[in-house]
Length: 485
Image 1 (cartoon, rainbow, N blue to C red):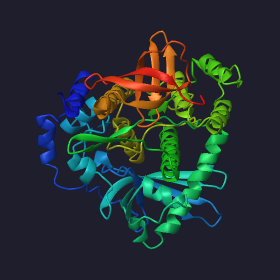
Image 2: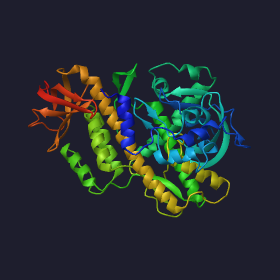
Image 3: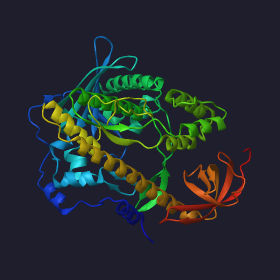
Image 4: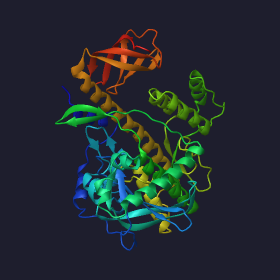
C-alpha cells in the first residue's frame, strides 16, 4: 500500500513543487558556517524577548516584547529573522525558495522552503541565541490605535521559547505559567503587558469589521509511521496575541515602504464579488445583511451565529471563506490606492513576518533593507508583478497539497473502522453529492447511499462503508436521523 509520505511527495510534484533541495542549493548550504554577522546594528539583546509558536515549531521567525510608556501606551517591538543576510538574492538557495515560495506542512512531513540548517537553526530566532533581525517598533494606545512607528535592524536574543497552548492556557487562567517563562524574571508581567496591547488592537479591528472565522482542519498525529489520532487546534489568547501583533507589524512595514517611495508586494482580499451569495446564506439563517459589501455587518452576523449555533459555526465559516475569495499578492506603487484586506478590515497590509517560511516576506525584507540603506528598489514593478502571480499560485497549490494529505491521513485513520457508526452533520448538499462532517473524529466524507432529502445542517448517524487512502475518499451510508435533530 502507498504510504502517506509517498502520497505527500507525489502531491508535491503533481502541484509543481520541488520536494527536495537541488545539488547547487545544498552546495551553497555547505558553505554557510554560522549565523549572520550583519555588522553594526542596534543592540536590543537585553530586552525580554520571547517567541510564541506551535508546540512543534522549530522555524522561529519572530519575537515580541512590550515596554510601558509614561503616557500609558505600550511600545510593542516585533523582531523578525533577517533571513536575507544568509540567503542572498539569485543564489541557488534563493532560486529554490522562489520556485516553491512557501514551506508546505502536510502533518506527515514538512517540506521547508529553506533547509532546516537555516530555517530551524542559523536563521531561526532560537532561545538564548544572538541573532540579526529587522525590528518593527510601534506605540499602541488603550483603544488599539497604532501611533508612531519605526523599522530598523537590531541584534536580539530570545529569552523564552514558548508555545500557544501553554501561554494561552495561562493567560486564560486554565494553566500554570509555562516553565520557560517562569525561568525568566519578569516574563509573566511581560506577557500580560503584551496581551493587553494585543487585545486592544484586536478590539479595534473588530469594531472596524475584521472577520472572526473558525474552520476545522484536523492534523494527523503519527507514531512510528502510523496515524494514531486526528487533532484539532483551536484559537486561544496566545494565538490571538501573535496574530494581532503580526497584522499590526505588517501594516507598519507596508506604510514604511510607501512613505519611502518604494513599491510594495501587498497581501489583499478584494471586496467579495459573490456578496449576494453571502447575503443569501444569511437570509437562510433568518438574518439580513446589507446589499453592498460590509465587513462590519458580516462580522456581527458571524458573531451572532457563533453564539447561536457553535456546532455548525465552522461549516458556516468555511462557506463564507469560499465566498469571500482567496487572498492574493499584488504589487502596489507609491501613491496607488490600496486594495486592502477585506477579511482583516485593514487598508495597508503586506507579508513581512515569516521569511523562513514564505518567499513574499523575504521579498519585503529586501525592499525594507534597501529603503533603510536609501538605495534603489531591488525589484522592478514588472518583477513584483510576476512574483506576485507566482506566489499566489504556489500558495494555492500548497493548500491543495496539505488538503490532499489531510484527506488521505483521515482515510487511513478510519481504514480499520469500516462498518462503524458515527454522529455527523451535513455540510454540503447539491447535485454533485451530499457531504457530512463526523463530529468525532473530525473527518469529512460523502454520503453515497440514503442522501435523498438531506440538507445542510441536518444531524444524522452514518455508517462507514469504504475508504480510499490514495484518493482521500471516505464513503458513508445514511443510518438514520440523529435523535432530537
